[in-house]
Image 1 (tube, rainbow, N blue to C red):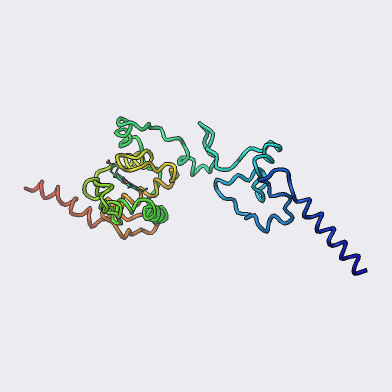
Image 2 (image 1 turned 90 degrees about the vertical axis):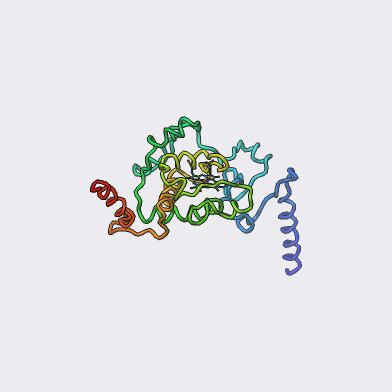
Length: 237
Ligand code: HEC
């Protein structure tokens, strides 16, 4: 009896081993427990065919007529489906990458975003990850990369760019300018406007933004006060 089950076991093992072989040298063969060695997480740039637990070989995909579905570009002239509130952030950017359109951006491109705590804080985070190494923590153009001499002349937001309109900022982040590369492929329009929220703070020299009861950025009254009194003084003179 023991001998019989022993033989049966060997036969079963042999069948299992042999049946897992495949004619395609790149195929892993039959996998009895694929979830043990295939990560269930979807990774970018890995083509899983239509079965996310298997990354199929080309031969098997060809045979099954499977076309890669990962990491494709959106179809031209299509707009992603989204909520009504977010729709404004997925519309195509109307301006082209030309000097004329850069000038137009100053007046034509207006931020649809409110200066809320949430947007400013997210913008700060994006800035920290994607801009700070060039533009510097406070936006003076003194980030680490600017110090090694490869990228020079990064302008200070609070002096040279103090009057830069938000539309031009958006245009530059979308298409790049001079030594600054485009960021449209890394940041959605929503994220671009969020990072602009933070750049606008740096432009005004605000490093610790304060918010009102509605969670909106408090307009810096301390800064506005001298400007408001200045014309009055000129009038009296
Ligand atoms: C590789 C370094 C580098 C990175 C990264 C970088 N910038 Fe710049 N940025 C520059 C340089 C250089 C300029 C000056 C471009 C010019 O006027 O020729 C510039 C200019 C700008 C301007 C002024 C544009 C204008 O219209 O005059 C803004 C606003 C700006 N950057 C925002 C950002 C934001 C936001 C990020 C992060 C998402 C970022 N930059 C990432 C190097 C960089």
